[in-house]
Length: 433
Ligand SMILES: NC(=O)c1ccc[n+]([C@@H]2O[C@H](COP(=O)([O-])OP(=O)(O)OC[C@H]3O[C@@H](n4cnc5c(N)ncnc54)[C@H](O)[C@@H]3O)[C@@H](O)[C@H]2O)c1
Image (cartoon, rainbow, N blue to C red):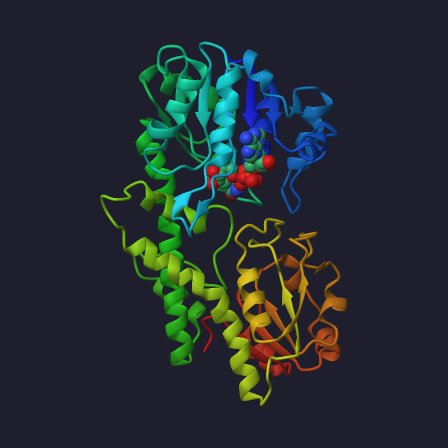
């Protein structure tokens, strides 16, 4: 029943989805507004850096066998049976509203080109009611067709995560929100080709709330863990030991604390959820949680400032190496990275900051070094913000020998405090008093 599939937006979500459908034999076209990204895909190259198991090989395979092509041209929607929209949906915290420019422009271009009877699915995460108040009107007004009669419309939010893109699509369950029974049935048919997990049919608004709520839930959980971490620091104990013992009690599953929450999704999805009831209800808990998580990068920088003060040092003019710029271990994803908050806090105090990351090539003019040992040489302190695997295997004796002062701030529980002290480091960690 489905033959031609168009994926609009070939980023972290769109490219694995496109490759998986192509691998199942569908003719897939990925649309991206950026020509460089289109060219990369058409060369069979993965547009995402970082450790992404099996994705580069799969893209190479499906491009070679001509099942996946990429383009900037929306006219390919004319022959598409299904069109999946996977563009970014950030949140503007200053204006306190979603930034839907990419979504609106994608919808308009799709509507100008799509044919009757196609199935249009928004995979992007959107605020509750967006399908009804924004997506449907743009598609209907531009195409002059009626949703439910001339074309089908659904919302199937993604549950991917960098580092597990293919795995999550294949194995996790999905919520298929459709505007009517026929849409839901067609969505289930479509996704059953690539998803082994359970597919749950529902309406669009439920799907919108489920997606934003599942991420808001996680953000609140992390905020709780961070709050306990701050308490443990004050009481001189180790939050990781506390967490382990808390989780021995039935029905407890305390999250990991850390130097901050990043990525495209968690920092904004509780805001999207709250936006869905703007003017009728003001959610409190998830906003408090968001604010607490936002403070963790400056708290992490504060641990360094405190330890330096204790040693009679001032961070001003000192060379500090911030280790890890991606928000997630073994990934190149820098969106909303807490590292930036740590770096800015240190720079505000006059520190000279060097940045190391094995996966991130560049970020808005900041120099990011690839070689760990040359980055940390002659530094007065190291601040670990991302738990890249490389850091777990560093030669501690070697770095101690090359640093000016052996101060280590650990934002991700990479090192054991006692061991580090034994080795002669001045060590502080988030949640480790
Ligand atoms: N990244 C994740 O882990 C993740 C997980 C679950 C859900 N999501 C949601 O999925 C959506 C996409 O996220 P992402 O991480 O893939 O974003 P992304 O920025 O990696 O990819 C979006 C892509 O869409 C392209 N694009 C934007 N506007 C376009 C247009 N009008 N026409 C053609 N291409 C266009 C961009 O160039 C970009 O390559 C977001 O709503 C996000 O919240 C993301």
